[in-house]
Length: 112
Image 1 (cartoon, rainbow, N blue to C red):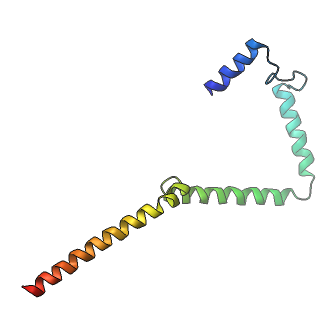
Image 2 (image 1 turned 120 degrees about the horizontal axis):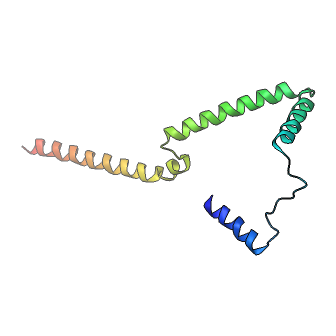
Image 3 (image 1 turned 180 degrees about the vertical axis):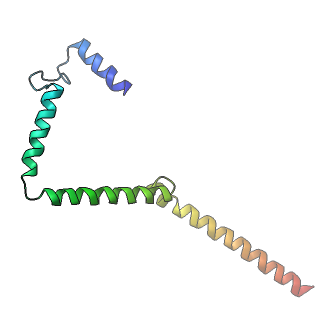
């Protein structure tokens, strides 16, 4: 955020027209709210508005469940799958180590 503000200030001091808002397009808060209300009124006349509400609701639920899956995977699904190879190798090595110990114990008991 600080970088963006400093970049804007640098552009302003250099007289760079990039990033300077068009004053004709700027609206007051009341004008923006009024325009938004008129857009909502216009869109509510559409037949597909209930469908849009349902799609939005289902998308929100899907995003929530995906966030839960991400949390269960330790914060990052990509990291979880990226480290799956290392985890599986570690488990195999531990299993082989335990198996060797058991075999050695059985051999020792047979020899005794």
